[in-house]
Length: 349
Image (cartoon, rainbow, N blue to C red; front, top):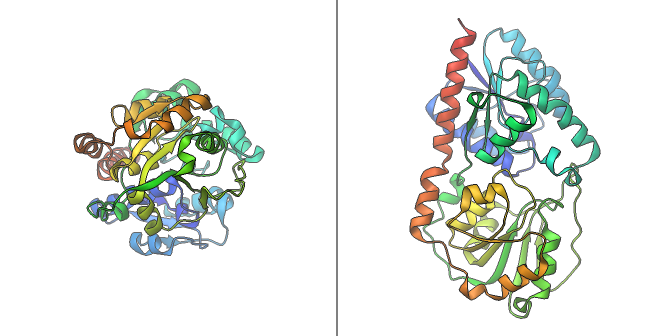
């Protein structure tokens, strides 16, 4: 029996939760017998219904994950747990999990003190005890091996992909507008303030608008956005709103100082936005040939690149097709399910 830690349906939507839902819905199609478990404080009722999640226990958050979930699994006696959102119960040795990045270690200033303490305590122990690990890029895989001295054979790369709700809208074209888009949490790691300064110093400020879609989160050290008529900040965009901005934006900019993957980069390319990315390892690995790279610390270089917006190439159909063949939630779910079945069989023999 395979169980999934579906606590992600009780959390706000970010890239981590998107990955969890999309791979889980694919896994459910391949193996309808998978059981999804979560606390009762559900924030994503549609996901609960689609996955058929069973809510258990009285606690919520970390307490549910570390106490009630492993106790429930112990009563079931047999079964392998998959935790798709970085952490799982420390008391469950019979589990596999996805670690999306090590930002809490590499880019500490982006997270709150207690979040860093918790992750730096928990992640190494889970990485050592898990039967198998998954992650979202070769870059993060190498970081996990380096930091925690793990066996490369025990880590599989399961890339992010395009969410099903976005795929259904890719064929609907819209004229591009003088709009620059960035999507992501408002943290120092995302480097949004640097983008704002570069945009305001560029010639584009006369004719273009900068659209920032992202929310503040208590676990992150968030930035503040000063009111400006040329900048529009949307904290909680629906999928419908996000799709409309992807369709309209001429350019998308992602100047993060660190990433494990970068789902909005992939999404922007799908909607034929010109894309500027910071020159960091994960972006180089995943998107070379489809985006333009820029320094994430040299404001003059960014301003000059923005001023040359007309010469920045749009993604080609060939480059988009290549990305689609590699970054697909169905492929990732198949990899996860294969490993889960291998380790489930090992626990029963």
